[in-house]
Length: 93
Ligand SMILES: [Zn+2]
Image 1 (cartoon, protein in one colour):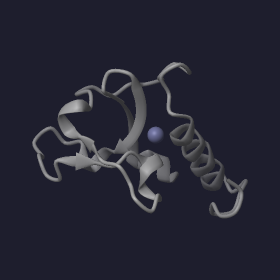
Image 2 (spheres, rainbow, N blue to C red):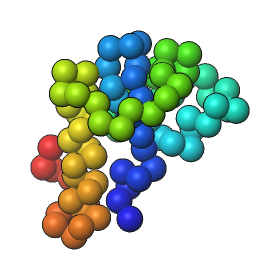
Image 3 (cartoon, rainbow, N blue to C red):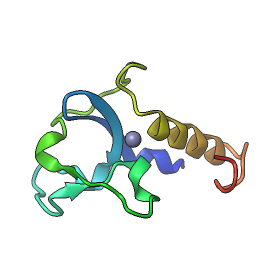
Image 4 (cartoon, protein in one colour):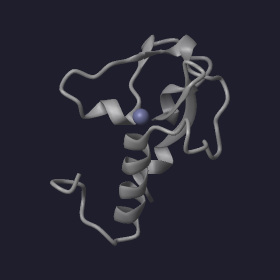
């Protein structure tokens, strides 16, 4: 299964759609207070997004104007890896 299955699109600050870990988006959770978008997870100094700034509802297919290009790239890579088209990410991005 694709690693992407563990993530879903949500709107941050009503302007940017990022992928967040599904398991941490449970509305009954309030810890950690800051969530990392997928695009931030591998950064050296990741920036968290406040839960309250992340939309309550999943976005099925965010439009290109709001979609984070780095999250989109990670999603495509993960799906390609899951289909066996590509090795695990490293050195290609
Ligand atoms: Zn992102």
